[in-house]
Length: 304
Image 1 (cartoon, rainbow, N blue to C red):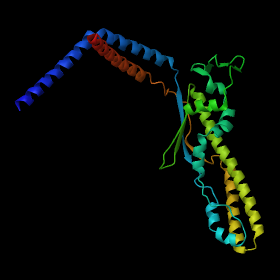
Image 2: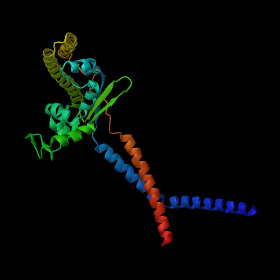
Image 3: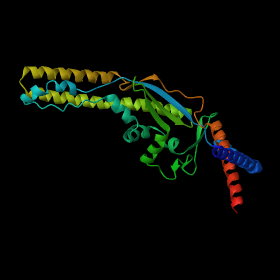
Image 4: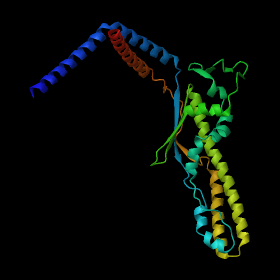
């Protein structure tokens, strides 16, 4: 027992000596630690000042459509229709809101609806925004605003890659409310692009649903002509009425997919960079680097 107590005492003594030795090393190398911390802090400060301000415009959207498909209605008469020699489409239910949610971040939607309606240099070559004159400056090595000439014209895929970095979306699974946002050096550009996105997604699905409803009506009319069964004709006529009502809804409703609960605004406060956080992070990293260099220098000298 006494031997164990002695070993414990020696271990504690060794720990105390080690900690005291480490503290002495830090104190003797305090100049190196201060220099590393100061340099890292200055670099972090310069980097944070170099980064341009960016503003985030947000919009809160509510879905206006849930399920727009006649497949469930068709499934109720598919058995009877097959006996009468009438072919019906497969009953695969689709949720138009889910389709719109995925479309928002798709390359096809960006290429067909967003890219043609924006000024490409604002996406690919913007350098900074002047708040006093509300003007953007561009990187000369990429785009010459005077001659309206690109050094190399960016491809649609490259533009989409940059777009993905500034566009974000999120959704509340309980309420279905969707939040979309655009981040840009100019708050006015961010708001304008967000307005364009909401308008484009509603317009695209209005057109798509108009085509689908028209084709469904045409198809159902053909099926009515193929059968003499009164019950099936009545069911198909009811489906035609549903699709006709859908056409009326498409024509009358501009906000066919999403309704703006909180429309996008021109933000007054920047969203990034977080300069205080960058400076504090640089200060801490510089201090840690200085401590590690001090320890490394000390033990390397001892080994030599």
